[in-house]
Length: 458
Ligand code: B12
Ligand code: SF4
Image (cartoon, rainbow, N blue to C red; front, side, top):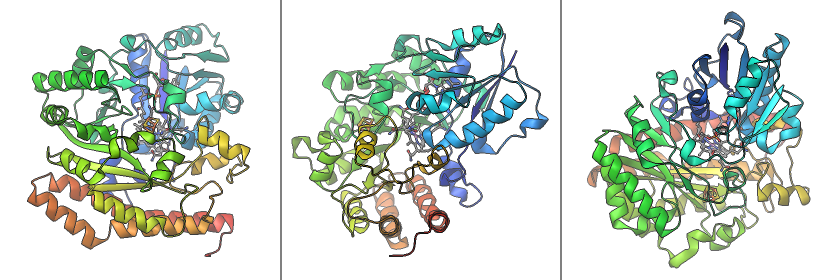
């Protein structure tokens, strides 16, 4: 039995455009969901994982599979349907799962043979068994998986072509920010995998650099942090010689022992969601957590960096409180905080989020010709009506934000400070040049987006 597991690409996503900016090579990440599915698949299936981010396979030249499984974020849904249509025309049954299938069940049901909602661990073997007997059901629901039963992913199936491996150690987030789908999809309870499993899986990853995909590796409560410390101790003891990056909330900065253990375990960088330079912005996004303890963000960033861990900060443009000038303000604030990289994203109502419900009820979702318009739900295009910013206006804010933060003079200043503090100047340089290179790619994409939508410069 031959199984294809496919990660569809979205050609509008700049980080997969390696030809246009070679630095993007370092930012194409492995589709971990498909490696998890492969790990759950019994040996009688011959599995190929096809990641279109590395180039579109010539499906017509490939042997006919018995089953196709497709994963998709919302931004990949369009392409997922094209791939599904191709295989269905050949009479091959297609199953789709992942975040988009879960949040937009009806739309997906119309376009594939079977949909799996929720996490796959508890249900995938059943789906395969039914497929083998030609009795696939239209819908399966995996719900939330029993985290102790998450098997080791099949990392060997996607061994080349990536700068980073990928691993997951926890699922779920209690914070439920308005714009984020994680709480809706993975639940509010913070669930962690057994540490021994994580260490064993780390061993099976060939890449020296690894992305820990957890939404918040350290959690929010003291017991979460105690577990993170235990994990870091175990990774350090295993002497894996890996460098890894992860996502965390800003409280990562509050515990010296945690930081020191993370660094010893190989943590080289952390993505932190600062989201808005204004406290009212954080309240609007439901991220009150960042406001706790009257935090000094600059001092927090410094504390992390002292352990030679790079900090990438993420901010959102397009909040109801955001007015013209917000792009430059974010660039200034991110520079003041001292982050090594800035990732600015457009406020985007993703299906299943509180923001989606709110914007839908206020009739503010502008790009709503679905499924075609899903391709723009990459957080790198404006898709809604923003309170104080027109579509052209918000695009100009984004260009100003990135142009400002990634000006050559600012990059040089950051790299000098990295050199001075012996904090991975080379990695920081690659990150900065990758973002800078993508400004050009983004401007081209905005011009095309505006042309298609008939938007004129304000
Ligand atoms: C790692 C990650 C990335 C990596 C992607 C790596 C990759 N190639 O997959 C990078 C950094 C590139 C990335 C990019 C983006 N991401 Co992202 N990302 C994540 C993150 C943090 C983890 C994903 C992951 O690997 N999880 C671990 C695996 C095991 O879980 P899983 O994917 O959910 O898979 C399970 C189930 O969904 C199911 N399943 C999944 N696929 C399938 C398929 C079948 C057939 C079956 C049966 C089951 C099944 O089974 C799996 C096991 O239980 C998630 C948050 C999250 N917690 O999921 C956000 C998340 C998926 N990203 C999100 C977004 C918005 C994006 C971007 C659009 C914007 C951005 N800048 O972040 C881009 C677009 C990428 C694109 N190509 O279009 C949103 C997606 C929401 C949505 N409705 O689409 C999420 C949920 C975060 C959020 N804030 O809401 N992302
Ligand atoms: S943005 Fe981060 S902190 Fe907020 S709900 Fe999502 S994962 Fe949790």
